[in-house]
Picture 1 (cartoon, rainbow, N blue to C red):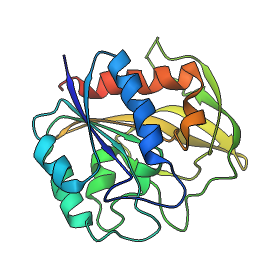
Picture 2: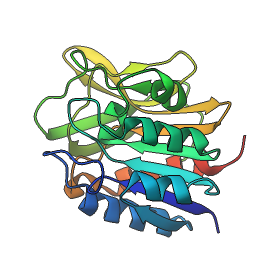
Picture 3: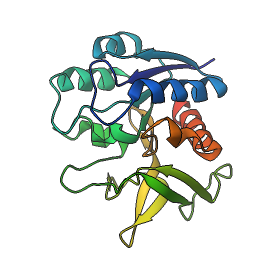
Picture 4: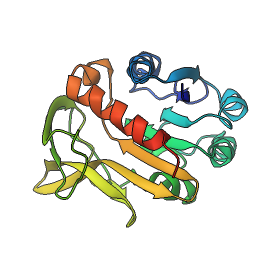
Length: 213
């Protein structure tokens, strides 16, 4: 059984907008359904201690609009993890100083440029050339439509959503020197995981990211 460490907001990293403990409980259930054992941690110290031998690190946390006092410790913990990485939703905003998080994840939220409209119905369309036969062509859900995220050149976009006349990447994967990384912009609240297709997407991203290069 593959082991997952799930770093959840609600301890060291919190913000006023996201019910991290509740959404992390849903994510943990999804991962267990995929056959993973899940160890959920709320502090950076726990993360540093438990993540080094894990097959997969899942990050469901955000720290608000500014750099966080524990960013250096979080960066060190992430850099010390040599397995796969799956980041969810607002985790794209983490570690705004420096480029190590963006390089590892394959993209990020850019303050002052990235945005989202009010939570509502969104449609994800599978990117052309995506070879994953298990992924549906369209996913309809209710969530925040993250827009104008920055994606690096080595990243393979799996899904986009349209807003403001542009198609925006909202799910992607990347092979890196430190291991595989995956990102889903979905997951603002518990209801965001009501869609079976969204739950399946998270499970498939986790399986992919946990596999060794």
